[in-house]
Length: 311
Image 1 (cartoon, rainbow, N blue to C red):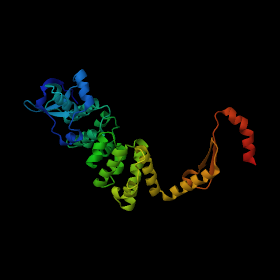
Image 2: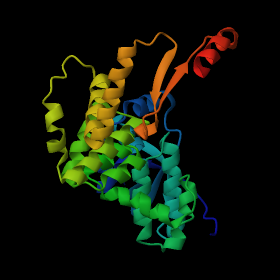
Image 3: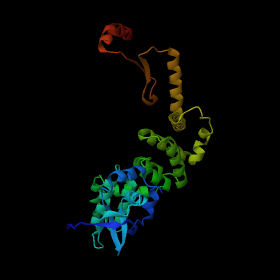
Image 4: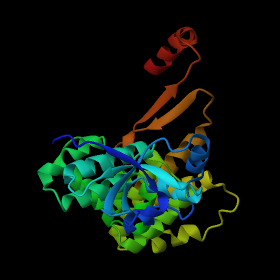
């Protein structure tokens, strides 16, 4: 790819327009407060990327939040890098990706997917692959499909991934649900904000039960939602919901867990002693685990323990 000389110019903000309805839908009407404060303190530190659409009219290609914040602060002009109409598509999309990487501390998988989807309309699949390393991915063809598929989720799910509330990995799970059920599930996640493994576990169990019983999310959670949770804070409610779902997904295992806990309670175990069942209750074996403050205490008590075990 031949190097195109970079053209930087100060442009009136009123001459710059973001016409991409999808990108506009991702951002709130009001500008980002932290970004506005940054601009007040330091001014514009990175140029906007624009495309000259016609004389004195430019299309914004990246960093919509920055443009909104500049307009909100009534900054009259902005420093821009201008791409000409003959800029090669691969260079244009590469620069869009790089500008978005700089604009966000944590680049949005949704914006990345959107750019890949746009690029796929002008470039063949092999030409798309060099864009992936710019996003931090390996240049594998299947990753293009994985990312762009996120765009087909319900709007609430797309926005949740963009805002970092829903992990992309979890987003792949909920695509098995209807758009209405996806929206209902996102509402639950936005309320309780489970992260990491808890979020994945929650979504995995809800999807499993909805598909198993051909049920909607609202019907599935109806009985649990009708219970009185007023005395519980949100983390406690989330833990109760996970336990409720686990009992529905694995009823026999849940029954065994409760039975084992009742058994352990009858023994009145002293401090430092724990009973552990076999993994997933594969058999009826039970482990007794002893915890000591240090190895010296274990050594002093070891002869008595060994004699007891061997008796």
